[in-house]
Image (cartoon, rainbow, N blue to C red):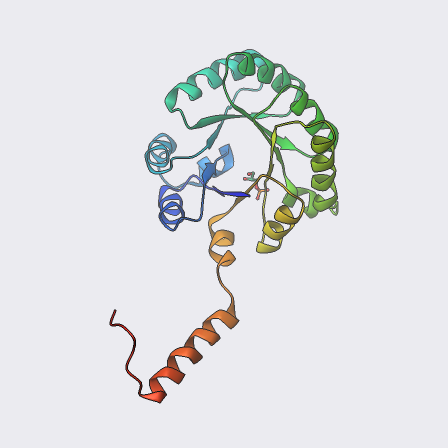
Amino acid sequence: MKLFIDSAVPDEVKKMWDAGIIDGVTTNPTLAAKSGIEYKKAVEEILATVDGDISLEVLSTDTEGMVAEGQKLAKLHHNVVVKIPTTPEGLKALKTLNQEGIRVNMTLVFSPNQALLVAKQNAYIVSPFAGRLDDIGHSAMDTISEIRQIYDNYQFETQILFASVRSPLHVKQAALAGTDIATCPFDVLEKLIKHPLTDIGLKKFLDDFKASKQEPLVQS
Ligand code: G3P
């Protein structure tokens, strides 16, 4: 399973890329607004840092505008994946962009039927928003497992991206449901590697060896 960072903050992206934790990046207009630096500059930095899929979202809501924006975004860099909202207009834009060989991530997906439609149009990625489903008392895990089953039933190649991750538990759920990608905020990625028993265990190993007064095998 690939891990992406859901961020428009270049420093966060660089830290996770240098740590070998992420394979790609997703952004959206909300993250862009919150990024703290000029969005254009932030995206340029992210494109120069990460050699993996980078989803950039269109701001138009009509098909013609989405197609025009998508074509321009795709020209920015070969790693760009154009992110389009899953509306009737978005589905039409997907069809056109797909015919032009532009990779599309269909976003704001909340139901297996939306996921079915975008897979039938060969979307490159589908993004069900798990956290926002859980927020309103739905089971994101059920929705995403159903999408997985539908895609497997018909051998759809669209990659399932578990989006709107809120916690490390969501990442485990994404992996258990067999999603292809999970996109996570910086703080969730940081938490994935940490476990208090690891820190306690390491301290004990080092303290015990020091107390034994033995020579280490090699020097660091
Ligand atoms: O990848 C989509 C994500 O940015 C949405 O997250 O936390 O706004 O539901 P959230």
